[in-house]
Image 1 (cartoon, helix red, strand yellow):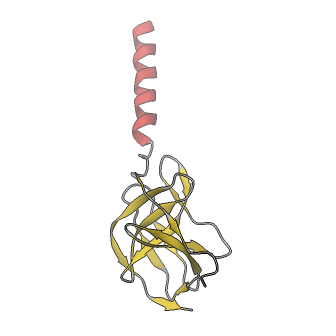
Image 2 (tube, helix red, strand yellow; image 1 turned 180 degrees about the vertical axis):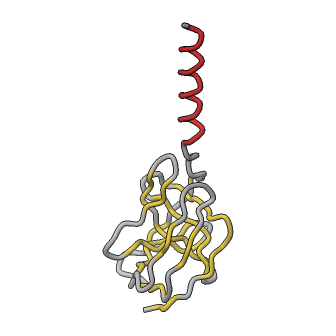
Image 3 (cartoon, rainbow, N blue to C red; image 1 turned 90 degrees about the vertical axis):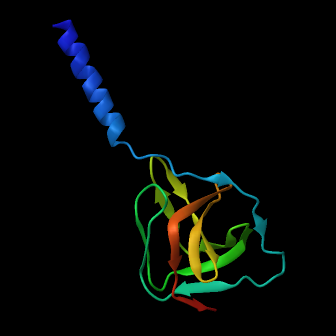
Amino acid sequence: MRSLFTTCVAVLVLSVLAGCAAEVPRAATQFTPVKAGQTAETIVLRRDTLVRPSIGYDRVLKARSAWIAVGTVSAGKVYRPDGFTLTIRSANTHEAYLVVRDGQLVGFYLPGEQGYAPVLSPVPLLLEIQ
């Protein structure tokens, strides 16, 4: 009887662990903020855009959402959402800013972790620069 109980508990624990999402892969990165007194560029998405982080759940970036340039990382320019918070989810939830290079979303800057998380493949953005 005890063996059956131990086996059931082991199966239950393994089932729960198998159902958990993996953590977002990220690398530490050097963030360089926009210089004080410099006018920050604002971009606006012109259409809903589906984004697939390298691990975690898909996100839709909403049309007409505005993003303010706050700095750069080696992968590109970093944009903070204007008036809302963007999160990416996997095993944990992370606040995220867009990292854009050559009009494409290449990843996310995670300000809480000071890290960079790439997307599966670059995502073209239809942008309006203000």
